[in-house]
Image (cartoon, rainbow, N blue to C red; front, side, top):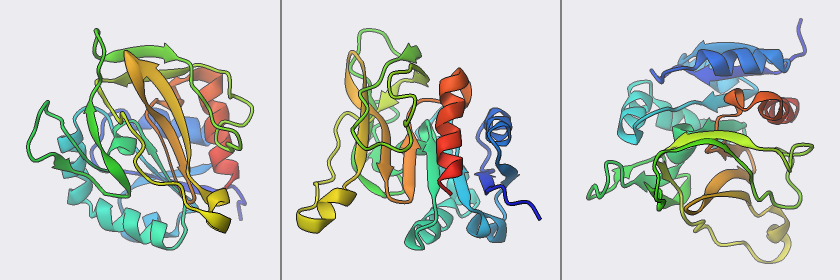
Length: 217
């Protein structure tokens, strides 16, 4: 029986998921593309992909009971990794389309609203450096590398207060990047991690990051 970590890529209709499947397999995971509830909950890790529109991504997630699947995994301390719009949906909601009122509701794992990037040129498309926090496990060994972004919306602020006392050591680790203004590029928060960039499109650095996550499962 294989001892490789079993990772499910959640199949909720998001485009271009096969590159993520291939990248995860390349770094040693046993990968399954499915929305089957039993498989999702039993897997060592769940990757939630997302490209394009926030609203469409949430519609796809709801169609496969994604909100419940993510909630159930996280309640049991089971690792989840969101990528691109799969990161954005972890927040309260999004202003996409621009100025939408009320904002489109997300999975509400983290406080904050996704907003259109405050930059002279949108979308942000290409390779960017990161400001990585001390203590990161996700970026260990690739702290100074560039990663590949394709997005018009992002999270401009981090609104989850840092806990006091003994719990402060377990505070979320937030990585930042900049395109016109700063935005959240990645978060490590217990079993829930996410990246705004595409690790599966970020060459050797992205593969290294995915291997860090897979080997932590």
